Length: 279
Image (cartoon, rainbow, N blue to C red):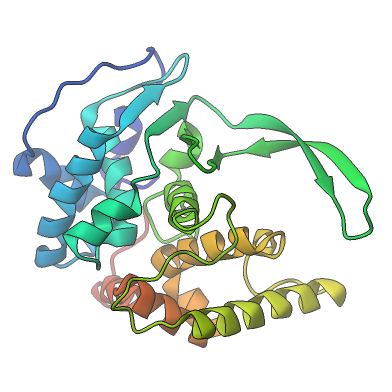
């Protein structure tokens, strides 16, 4: 689980309905156990942690949070979720960080993975229909939907984080109505659109080449299903398995480091040097 103390599970209960919450000021004392409990947050330096807490609280307070049937979560759990989402924008200015999730209005928490009927047309014009099991989903102007068991499995360095994945889609949707793997770039970013396209295209082509040769892909093969999923999976790896990402796609790691303005590998290596075990 994400929290070494075990309280992550306690925060994610399964016995309630939709929650009604009132606006309250940010409480540094309430933030402290969350910051030190989740590995992804515990490895932040003090300055970053002090900046992330109020931003996460603002995200928590400014959006509508809905618990599905049988789900009850307290403010500590919601703040932990909001903090992982806000980790994506930690390196940006307050204004850019706030604007990044303007298209997020609602976060829905469900008790388990859910199913969707999917219709997709392949490159030959053939329509395929199937039922897809999902841990999370979002869409343009749609809610961010998260399954509680997968939220509980997020927060550490396993390479998996459903919160980061779905909120990365929201970044992607900042300049289009469909995920396409190309989010808006800040006006003062040192990442260019041409560079972004070149590097992500090279990664995409490499993934497709591995599949064509019936070889395992260097990263989760879900990244090879759609350019938007490629971006979201790579965001997950950048924050939760940066050592793996830089080993197989060093140029992509550098691109995301400059895009997010964060050095996630340094955080991970500090943990390794300190000899802190995964929960």
